[in-house]
Length: 281
Ligand code: ZN
Image (cartoon, rainbow, N blue to C red; front, top):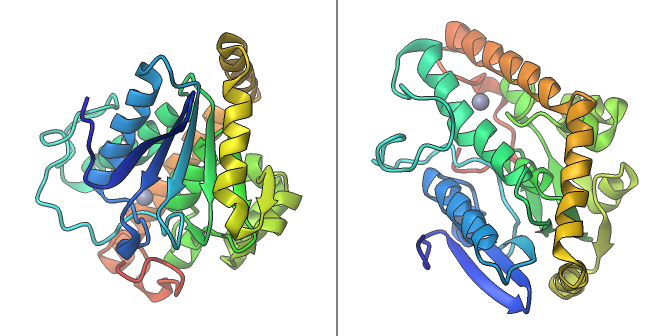
């Protein structure tokens, strides 16, 4: 496993704690393919290192993440230049086949792996957390946000029914999930906390210190008990149907992509590119 990453920092800020920092601040930490697979490698490393008991996911200032990098111009190829983590292939196949396989691989199954890491994870969120940024925060077990954090899934304005990892109803409750998606507005950290999506809101200056203290507290507990709590809670959500709900929404997400291809010749409705979406999109 690599010790250095082009798009991330891997830190050990305290005994028992690994801190993974997305480090493309000029792109507002938008996730390109390199970052996605660096994240997977860094998470796998944190799981493999026996001294790590808790994992923090942070973003280099000023924003946590502006989502998926829709202008990723990498020449690298999925399935050749990156390890395949999903059960899919034929990523370059024409039509819906290749697109479906790519999004299974890049978004759905990577996010599910990170959500199911055996060790506890905490998202440390400041600034903007948009669309694919939400997916990253939601994949973590706990979310600590600074007062200036803003959460938004504007994908509906681009003619698609939300991001690929569709847990909005579970994170926000059904009514607020619909409102977030339909309005595409940015919600404050306090609004997100009121919905139960965010565990704690801190002043910006205290965010890292607070998150690290929380991680150290969890890391000090018997690790097997900590991990089995996570397993029990995640399995409870799955028994309640979360996994199947994500799968059915992913199918509708791809119906929207197919519709947009037929209507506009591109995967999203070009009329709705939202101002808060990664400007490089
Ligand atoms: Zn998509």
